[in-house]
Every structure is written in structure tokens, then in C-alpha cells.
Length: 411
Image (cartoon, rainbow, N blue to C red):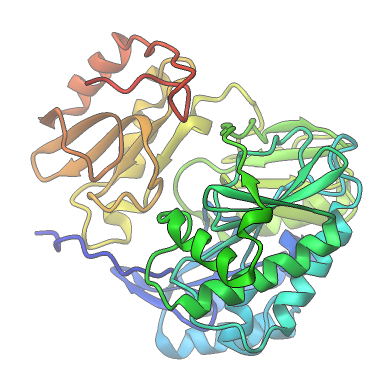
């Protein structure tokens, strides 16, 4: 019998572990999204020593480790501080949770000053000791364009390259700026949002953004935020700037595989890898795909368009091994379809709508076309064989330029 789904309302961190069915979870946020080969070895070693040796990549480009205890989680945090992968306190660690364009400083088409802007923003957030009280899961993003276009990252505040300048985007408003003045604006806006003491995030409630901009006295100086929304391009295979991308399929990897990737980035690259959103790892100055089994390096691989949570392997809310089911369905996935296989209605692996969302139940799967895991299903109790038939007969929805993701949601 599975436990009823309960929304925690927050994510685990390095200093704030979260209990799961297979032990406690912690997350590592590599500073500026980069990880040296030596640091990757340190994480792999600590995963085996303090946890169960399993590691996941999150949608925000963090490494999540599983199977810890309250005592071993504290020991793990100390090891990460020694490795230069963590701040010494939870408040500083939480403030530095940036979501970054993965090819900043690599892609020749991206904003050339993006690395300087990112470093300045990270330093400003680390030093903002009075910044507290932001809603749970609050996130700040930096988008620099190029191969990964702007409009791919979803955040409460976004500092986005735009032409020769930058925009600070919050809610439905945008404030034109330079990169460095944008850093100051992001920090001021974060303080104003914290002062509102509202439980909602601007990403969910744009009125919070308007209220914060009004506090700063700049609401009249803003413009409507750009409405473009793009799906991220595949980060598997050769990438701009002499980089090589590899994507993890749904589910955790072993610490041994992280060790193998660390050796690869040192032997075939410059010793640096980037832990990017969308389960992606980017090897800098590397032109040869890593040969390790379990990595996706083909941009046409259908597993790139599948999301699945840990399922019954590590969550008491899930009645099925949704990872195994998702991988079983992968060969039948139609071209361009995005599939989310969720262990419960929380939809942790992909909160946004997908072309087809499946929600596990004790009697099979519920079906939510063009929806989220918490939407009302159109059918339930479906077997994998029945879902295969649906996939094989799938007709892509008509294109609708007025819809946020370009797809027509059926009535």
C-alpha cells in the first residue's frame, strides 16, 4: 500500500535534507554549474560512503544523492565544503541557487559578457546576508542566448541577454538594463519580493512582481515581458564551442558512472564538466562522446523526451516502478512527443504540461493528454500494452500560435 501524496513545498538542499522511502536526500549545487574532475570524484566517493551510491540530476542542474541518514547527511555536507562545492551555512547555500544557461562562456553566439554577469550575480547573492524570507523553491535564472535560446528557463526572476543589452524579467514585466545594472536590479527585486512576505512566487502569481516593482518605484519604467517560450534543444552530442553533451536517461546513476565521467572529462577535455538543466552534463573542450553505457549522446534518442520520477524505487507515494515503465515505452514514443510518467499526482519530475502525462495507480495508469499530473485524467486503469497502442496511434496536435507552447489543448 502506498502513502497518499503529500506536497512538501520545498526541495532538499545540502544543509536541509529531506526524508524519502530509501533514506534522506541531499542536493549539491556546483558553484556556477561547473564541476572539476576532482570534485566529481569527491561526490562519487561521498555518495558511496554516506549514502546508497545513487545520484540523480535534477531539472535545475543539481546533483541529488539518495539513501543518507541524518548523521551521514551532516558528514556529507562537511565533505562537500572541503571539496569547494558548498557554502558553510544553509542560508548562503539557498541564496546561490542559480539556474544558468548551460553554454554560457562556451557558445560563440551567446552574450559575450555572460560569464562576468553570472560571477557578479553569484557574488552579490552570496554577500546578501539580509536577503531572507523568499518563497520556497524561489529561483533566479540567467539566460545568455545562442544555441540554447532565451525563453527556455523558467524562473521567478530572469536576467536575460537581449540584443546588445539585458532584461530583468519578473512576472509579466521586463526592465531594460546592462548586465551589471541588471545584477543590482535582481538583488533589489529579490529583497522587495522578500519584504512582501507572500507565500506565492512571481512565477505562479505575477501580481507579486508588480507589487515588488512598485516598491522599488520602477514599475512605470518597465515594459511587457517577452512572451516567447522555447523547448530546450537537445544537449546530447557535439555542441557549440568544442563541447560535448551527454544526457542521463530517467532515473539515478551509480557513483561509479560519475567516476567514469570524471576521468573522461580529464582525459579528453579540460578537466571541467557542467551540470546543466534537463539531466545534462557538458564536457568542456571535448570533441569525443563518452563511451560509458547509460549516457545518451544521440540527439534523436527518444529518452530525451521522457521524464519520470524515482517511483517505487525511492518514494512511498508511488505504487509502480515508473522509471522501468517509462524506459519500456520509449521505443514506441512518436517523434516530437514529450512524455511524463509520474508516480503520483504531485508530478515532481515535470510540473509543467507535456504532450502525454501518465500517472501511476495501483490498477494501472491514468491518462492526461496535454496536461499535468494533477489534471483530471481522461482515462484510468490502463496497462502498458494499452498505452503502447495509444502511442502507436498518436496524432500530433495542431499548431496554435496563440497557445503558450504552440500546441492546441483539446477541449
